[in-house]
Length: 307
Image 1 (cartoon, rainbow, N blue to C red):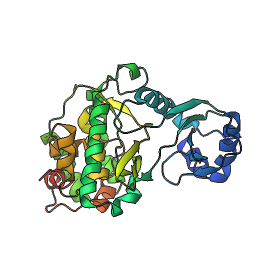
Image 2: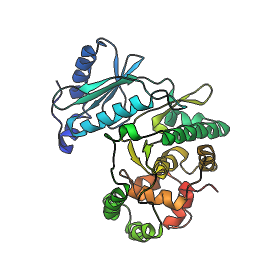
Image 3: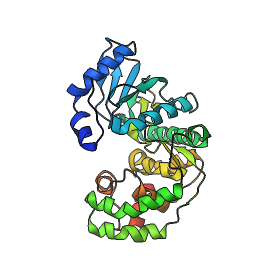
């Protein structure tokens, strides 16, 4: 029903095409006892994700990304009922056909926080950010041991070295101007990052798009999308917070860190930004406030500072 997808080229040809993917999703729903329920594909996200009626969500993973389905299902099962913000309940997971895998989970109530954000009053934004901080702090406090057979990297220091080796070329390939790329190596040299920090369970993308909120009382009603979860330094998760949750809005990073229960060095957070597996600095420069000076130190304070 679904074709093999084992390369990035095949992914580009198949995954975005709903006419190709939907019949497989419908067939899988029938096998799972949900045949006939309305299927509505979400427009956001990298993988095909469908609302199945009002209560379920079906997420499909082609062969090239099959390991992400294992990650997501394991993490969802591990987190069930353990965070102050709800996470999807895992209902079923497994192999489908031609290398595809699936995760069937409960649908979280509420509105996408990114869409709701412009309507949220300033004081309520502070509260929402505080709730997100409490959720992340709880996530990081959990024992990650039961997931050690699924999540990596095995060696955080080696991961940083590998990311560091390609940092300049990754940003150059994204179109970052040379005036910025030529400063990357020197900035990274100036920031001390722990090679062997306490390893915690990381969401890796705690952004507005991965939270849902009650639009009547402006309280978080869920956190989702755990397919890119990994083990590592807790500060790595603050990259997504600064870039996609607080987004340089005055006072929000300070509120986040207060509710989280510890402070973070803005320079360290920017260093992790430059080393992040999904780093795209030209995009961030378009989306976030411009630094007052053309230096990475200035960027770090603008995006991650608490002043």
